[in-house]
Image (cartoon, rainbow, N blue to C red; front, side, top):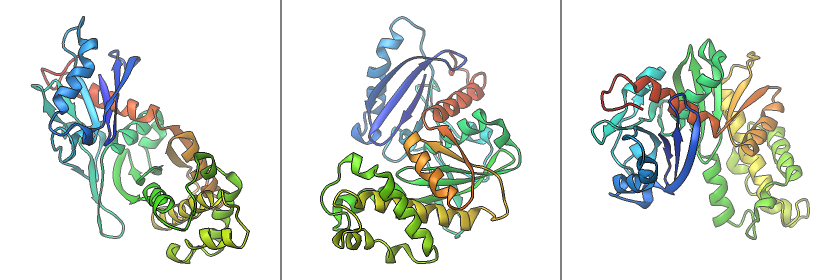
Amino acid sequence: MAGDWGTSHLRLFLCTADGSVLETCNGPGAAEVPGAHAAALESLIEPWQRHRAPLSVILCGMAGSSLGWVHTPYVACPARPEQIADGCVGRWNGRVQIIPGLSCHNRFGAPDVLRGEETQILGALNLEPRLQRGRHLLCLPGTHSKWVVLEEGRVSHFLTAPTGELYALLCAHSVLVGAPQAPEDAADDAAFRTGLLEFNRFPQAQLLHRLFECRSRRLNGELTVHQPAAYLSGLLIASDVYGALETLAPAESNEAITLVGTSRLTALYADALTLHQRCSQSLDGAAAPLAGLIQVHQQLVGRIPAYAN
């Protein structure tokens, strides 16, 4: 069994030994069941256990955080895939294994962490064997976007940008966007691309000096009342991409940047990369973490006596 236990949502997969998914179920997030994680998991898997021998469970995400079941220490970068498996913490006499996150000091000398994304990285390495050789840059866009440098199959270091969180906060709690936006407003492709292009006209400008445009361009009629959210998204993603390329990706490199996430988000980041003449390829944000969970599961089988199919 494999599960991604986020802050607000748990997704469980009942799998065969080779990783084929038989059934799925959903449950409460790690922050929603404080002190009752074991009971919550047991109630969810009870129907699957009813006619089977005790099942082993591999979990990633916030299950290993201070909000989760048991604190699972970060593995320091540079980290190889087997080190992530070695860092798992067991529960239920080893039958449940919780995957650790990763930590590093980023290019600015600041501490940085990720938890849950390590399975997406492992999945990308598994789904795209070429990533196991040479140097590659991965982008995992989301609430906290992660830019990950891989070197010879190991996670060298990474950089976090709270792009999605900043977008959500500004839409909900500022006058920049204006009236509450419907989901389709944020998907206005023309306004998004205008935001990308406007940011790239003056890429050295501080993002702080560009944000008020979301309001002023609406007030003077350049944007309709429904377009500021998409324009803001363009500014933020353009800033995220430009900063990451300047910091982590040599200009002379022709290597495709690998995007791991939902089709909508990876398409937006691919558009932003194209404006810098950088090619990209996208991996399914649902397939990658499952592939990573299965990889860790396979590494643990045989090493922990209680942990088996």
